[in-house]
Image (cartoon, rainbow, N blue to C red; front, side):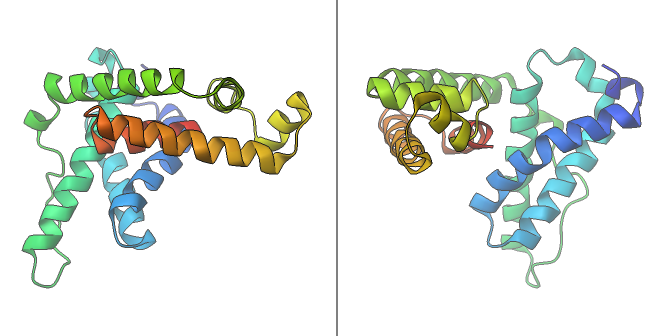
Length: 186
């Protein structure tokens, strides 16, 4: 709400919290770190431009995900159309792409991810939840469960692979999966 009123410190907090998540998603779809950084900067420029709209947003994470997704897609389209691969549209995210159907897509994929987590073996699910919900590092999880950090890492990798496969088989949307899993990992 403070950001919506123009508070630059609040904007900086949002920037610090979400920059790496958006960067990881962008990096997964773009060819290199420079392009990913460029897209992230475009997302945050657009966020500042649309800050007044944030007050009316019910689910900021989903809204920002949609903005990031659309920015990445727009960037890829612009790059494909540009012979020298340097032109980028000033209007990065058209308002009509931030639609209820895109929000529904995100929420449906989130639901499928929750179903996938329920299919994990108990120890793997517990480790995954400690990482996701508890925000614990591999070392902290290892200490809590009295296992090796390498074992924690192995469980997380297997859990992520299982979740990705489950979502793929059950019709989840890849951009939402990348966003949610980046949020879990980071």
